[in-house]
Length: 201
Image 1 (cartoon, rainbow, N blue to C red):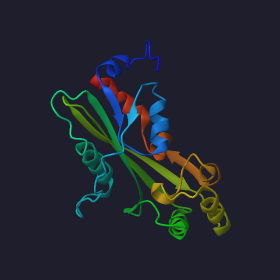
Image 2: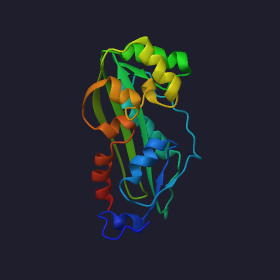
Image 3: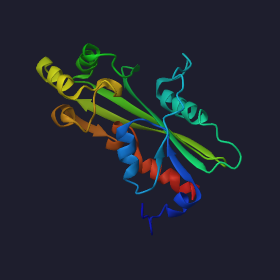
Image 4: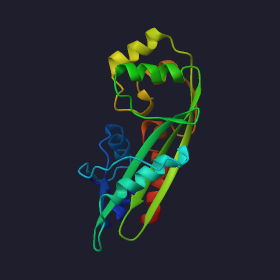
């Protein structure tokens, strides 16, 4: 990738940038920064967290856990980016649905309500590590069962926290307003990430 004059060109020259995520949305969003990177999904982790952890702290905890699994060692030239996103409704974390019925039930619960989407991100090299989180508030309009079933049947959102993708049909048809980063709801607060990456140059 030609990155002449890119403000982060020195970062790309110094490090091999690794996105440790299998999410196609995160790959798409990181690509917007015009930086060369590779995807590494070979280091799976047990994504459990302490029971006493505050719900808004869970994504940062898990992103740091994912980064630690890649085992940076002295002399390592990798810059690792990991992330985790959760949907919070009534102080309860909604993860990825286990099947279509579960997805429909999640959407019924969120219909007409305000929820929070929190993404935790860790950027790590041998020299330093930053972990941060970003919060976006999302307000859903009321949804009929017909609308919910149509969305789940057509888009199969089983790989998405909260059973929806804001960039899909449901974002246009059912999301009344958001307060915060749109990209954060997709899974990566890309402006905040860009700001943090500049600290590594």
